[in-house]
Length: 85
Image 1 (cartoon, rainbow, N blue to C red):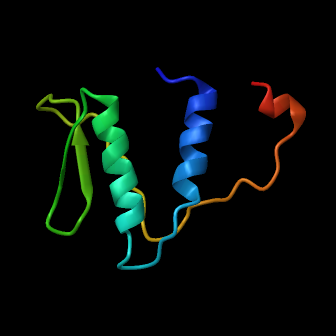
Image 2: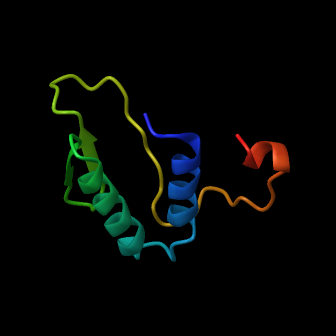
């Protein structure tokens, strides 16, 4: 499992990418590159440009759905105690 600091760095990169409806290519390209780099995660793009990732198994145990056309949230402040975790 990735360290919390690695996940926060990934989110920071992801959420600063430019995006707008029907122009999700920056986010999609970034996520595809991260999935390739992670290894062991099979993925494909469907006819609508959605990323469908699996662990190679036949059963879907978890589905994560998110819009790629607008940021979900923005980190505007952290405290010293949170940054040290």
